[in-house]
Length: 200
Image (cartoon, rainbow, N blue to C red):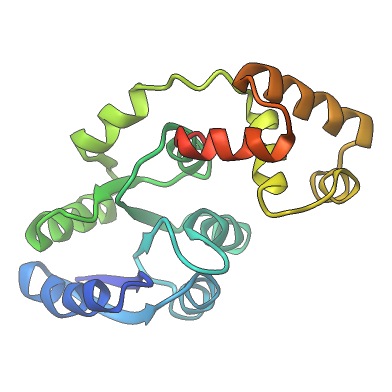
């Protein structure tokens, strides 16, 4: 028996999976979560064999939730459901130790078998997800992406520096470099360009 916590903000999909996964495999759903904060709370409380979590959720997203969980439960096995597997996001998830990636459009039977695979200590990345991860045309460094990510949330240079624990001059250098590489005139244009190209 594999015990899971299921986190997805799409109620219809979450409810369907909660109903179908136990029919497809030896799986029990301990709790459901509709956002990142609830996912963290439910995972720490129920300590599932596998956390099945959506990448994009309101508030704290899937990656943010996993980072928080990892601090308390570094051994937590995680299966990430994703609709758009952007290369940068996949790299971040792999760095966080996510063991599995499955497309949200996959059949419940497939998702159930991947959950079992991960519970056995193996890894799994759907071929359509891994193909997207290989196509990486992003010229920006991780740090440049970090400052653009915070920029797109509307923060000033001083706020970005404080949030990322960097000097303001360093933040300006990263932003300037990102604007050059994206051939844009403002940091907000650069952030928008990066988002449109699925780099953020």
